[in-house]
Structure formats: structure tokens, C-alpha cells
Image (cartoon, rainbow over all chains, first blue to last red; front, side, top):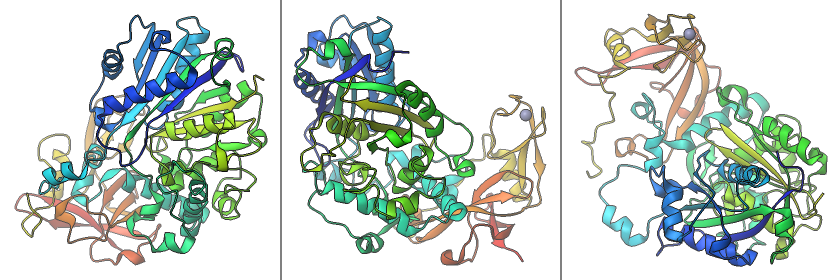
Length: 392
Length: 139
Ligand SMILES: [Zn+2]
């Protein structure tokens, strides 16, 4: 394990995100790497490691990282892998890069995600009449599920959310409070897709259902785009263009079992490792960038990091603690619900921006300890990062 | 394929690991898998037991009684065959014997479904050779 502050993030590249057409998933990945290198003041030849989290549009890209290496014209890499823990992959890529750098395998690693699930209007027209549903919904249809009309990950998370409502008294207002708080952050983030759209709790209740208990405003904004993050040693990062963002702590937790029974994510496991490395506890966290595929996921994650007791996250959010001006700013760019869904790169990228103090109108004044979470599957995989602008 | 009244709901395939389940359903019996190694009941069927890793399993009839463990209400149409059925509920039943099974309730308003509701199996003949277990409320 690297020690606290031994590894740093030196570059961040984000393409435009949302209804972005005209580039392929590969083109978006390349653009993100170019932006991250420019941000760090590095050249392609400075990279000796490449990790890729391929989104849906990559298909079954077991060799995706090699394809990306060829597209980027990278030579003589010392570390490479295609990784997939769903939404926990972004954090896992940073961790693999940090471990490899600390072990001396390589020095400078680009961690990359891109996806292009949205089709341009003309592409949709070509597909009209073939209403076989989304690829994602069929990928998750198991056994008899489709026979009974159970399609897609939204429907699966809805079953877990309903259990949380039953066991802990979580309400539809609590879910809505998450959507409203994050929209208030998005209203301060010009890059957010819903930057200009205010949201009240009444608007939330009036929005259409997808699958109860989820309105459309409980679900993340499926988006096209790419994000890349450059990881290197803290020593090297200090000589580069941007102030380093130090990796204070990192951990993973993959609980197994049935989350609809436990109503617990992998956060308690991942947190223990990461907080011990960083030498902090939950009270030290100034900003939390939490994986928010659904409003519900934010509630579970708040509880599982110990920001409130189990079952009390709904009241915690409804009291305004996570909104602008609250005691624990959460998903300060609007998150996946109101900005863009780049899997685990959404919370990671915003965590880097906040740690650097580059967040403009939405900058949180105290940003010395930033928590970033990733979550994949059905609360199945989890990664934790603790980031800071301070070396220790 | 165009949206219209002739689009059938997806049906399970008779081949594969669900075949004994579907054969039993045609006889109006509800069965789940039972691990021959440790006796644990499981559903849906799997190649091996996640408890003892045994690949030996048989099928055992269960009472068909249980309670609603969780449910959702589908509004979005993911498959054209369901376009005329939304909003409909997908329910997860916790059977009295332990395993959970995904299904639908028959003739029950979606806004009255509650977790913990006691239910029992009924069998719906959906085609000449497919019968599906569904559930109804019981006192
Ligand atoms: Zn067994």
C-alpha cells in the first residue's frame, strides 16, 4: 500500500457531456486523455500506464485498453488493463494506478472512461420500428424476469429502495429531497446539463414515473462523454502544471449476498480501509462526492459512511445538510442526477475540481478532505477515495 | 416489429435449467431447486450451490404460500408486449420455505400492494404448452 499522500492526481480531462454526438466512444476517450495531459502539462510520451473502464458503447471490449493504446499511439507502456466494477471502476483504476506506481511498475498512468449510449436523432430514426428495448434492460433480464415484465436496472434498484422505505420509513419526499438538493448544486455549475432548470419538491412529485418508487428525477442522466485522470507520484506531481490532489486514503468493499436483504452497500468495508489509511473518520470529511445512479443510492451511501444512523439519511437530506450551505455538501456539481452520468468518473472529477479549489460559484470554502465513492451493480461493488490538496 | 395487439409477451424457453420448473408448472405444482449437498433451497436455478459448491441438485415441491418481500410498479415500457399493461407490478415473493421468486399478482390493484401481504400461488395457462405461476392474496 502506498502511504498517505505518496500518490497524487496531476491531471483531469473532461469532454462535453450529455447529448454530445459526432464522436465515437473511442474519439471521446482520446479527447479526454488529450485534455487531461494538457491539464497536467504532460505529453503522450510521458504516459507509461493506461487503464480503461469501457462504457456500454464499447460492447464486449475485453481488450479495450489495447485498442485505446493503439488509437492514442502510445508506445512502451509498463502497465495496462481493461477494468470493470461498474460504477466503482473509477475509484478502482486510481487505486490500481497508485499501487503500481508505489511498487515501481510505472510512473504516470492515465485512467480513462468513455461512453456513448445516446443516439443522435437521425440514428434513432433509422432504428424506429425495432422496439426491442435498450441493451441494458436485456443484459439484466435473468431467468423468468422478462416473462413477468421485470426489465432493467431501474426496476431492480426500485425493489431494494422499496425495502428501505418499508424497513426504515424512508419516504418519497426523502428521495425527492436528494433530487432537489443536487439540482441546487447543478444550478451553480455551468457545465451541468440541468444548470438552468430549477427544481422544487412539487416539480419532483409531478414528474413522470419510470418504475415506482422512482420518478424520472430519481434516475441518473444517461450521457455521452469521456473523462480521464492522470495519476503519478506526489513528488512528480509537484513539478507539474496543476497543484497536486493527494490520495490520502483508498479502499474497496464488495459485500456479496442480496442487498435487498441487507440494505447495505460496500461502503462500510471500503470506508474502513480508506479512513484508516487517511487517518480520518466521517466527521473530518468536508465534501462528499457520492455515487448517485439513483437518489436512493445517495441515501444508503450517506448511512453507510456513518454521516447519519442507518435509516436516517432521508431526514438528514431533507433537513438541508447536503445542499449548498449545508453541513456536508454532497454532489456539488449536481452529480449524475443533474449534471451527467459518467459512471464513477462523475463523483471523482468533481472531487478533484473541489479539492483544487477550481469550482467557481459552487466552490465549497473548506475543501481539505474530500470523500469520493463509487458503486457498481446492485450495491454490489464499492470503492472509496479520500482526496486532499494537502500532502498530509 | 411494430407495436400492436399481436405482439406476444416473452415466454420462457423449455430447454435449459428452467425446464423442470416449467414442466411442474404445467402440472400446477410449484417447485424450487434443492442442493443435494447441503439441503439448501434456491431459486432461480443455478449450476451450483453458493453455500457448499455442490453441483448436485434436485427439484422439490413447495407450498406456494409466502408473503410479498418487495415490489415495484412498472410505468416505462421496456418491451412492446407490455405497452397495454402499464402500470403493472412486479412482485418478489418470499416463499414460506425460504427462497424468493419474482412474479405478478393476479387481479390486484397496484396501489393496494403492501410488503408483508400474505399470498399464495395460482397457475395461469398462458399458451398451449406454457403455464406460469402467479400469486394472489390470501387471508
Ligand atoms: Zn449446498
